Image 1 (cartoon, helix red, strand yellow):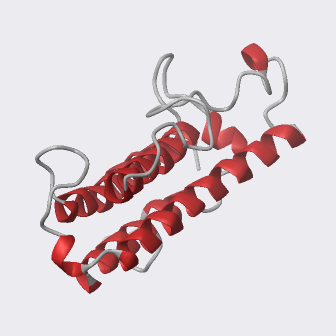
Image 2 (image 1 turned 90 degrees about the horizontal axis):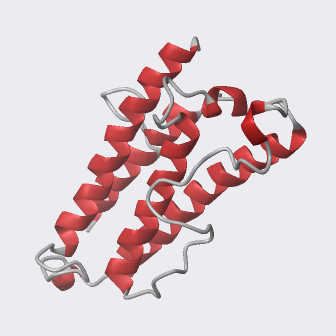
Length: 167
């Protein structure tokens, strides 16, 4: 269990040898930078952060048997960010206070989903790790190592997007 927690934590918010983890890659990103798209139809940093939160939730649900549809935001997987109601068609300035609050709220959601998943891992009996999760054919151990890999994959994408946006 200790090794899995180590992997989850270093991929998300603990010091790691490879450079920024997911939370570190998001540190200092503004709502404007988070909302920037490299091309139409491509995901932005903000969407990657919420996507990571969603899949931490999905992993928690698969570990615990939690109720489907209980993610705090409507939708699944990739949710459009920023919320178009806050900045319709780019007409509202991206530094608007509502966008600042929405960005902070989505970063807090990511943090909450990580802590919720981590708490479920701590409560998981070690003899359950190699049993299938709610996702057929995937053990709980594989699910959790996959979450860590997912965090690092998107941390790398975020680092690239930050370079492209000029940060």
